[in-house]
Length: 291
Image (cartoon, rainbow, N blue to C red; front, side, top):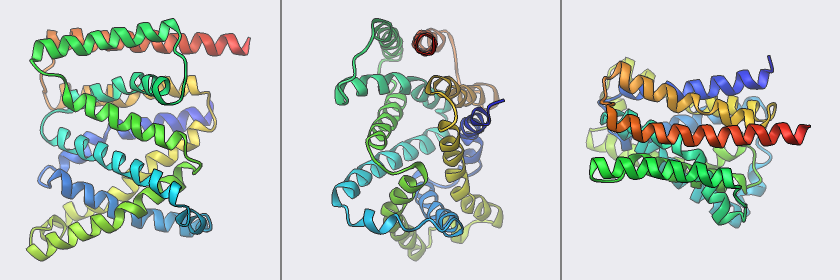
């Protein structure tokens, strides 16, 4: 088996299991959990880059204002995505959050059309139309759009767009984003500590350990993803990525008993059909190019 496929599968599986981790920390607010994730990620990345002796890139980057501005924007989008997802999991919206990551590839297609002057093939337009019909159905039946799903999909697609057009690799890019977010997160946690409401200070040792694990839990899947993406075709990577929302959906329905009735089945079914059409078109194109 191609080791790249194994790395990618592990990365998307770990991301799919995130609801268990955040549910274990349900007593901590989403904003505080987000701050802890930034702080412990910074410490973990500091250790990784020190061991690898990989700090030389940081000096020139910090002097590039245009690049810093781009990564400041990507850091805001990433933290927004994280914050919404953490809140959604602990508010009992794991199923709706999973829909966001099912929709995400199709939002990426639209962003490519809008910002990168990419052209959509007829089959891709068909996939987007079917997915839009699924979202409209859920909006009609629920009386409002699936805001959590759409916010997760759009924020992560925007993050992907900024990272696609940046010149830093996965590890360096994540480190720069974390460097930019770290002072804000540390200041927030310090203020909570001064008020006596910092969860880490007042929590049991088990919760403290889980919070400290936020660093490797955040960084390791991304490093596995980067290693896998370099070794396998983009079409294969696109198929493997559905492991994450599929696991999230199963965890929400089977483990945490979130509702998933006929209305959700029709709406999600339309989006799954759209993804199948989009993925099969990509596989056929990739096979045609190889031929």
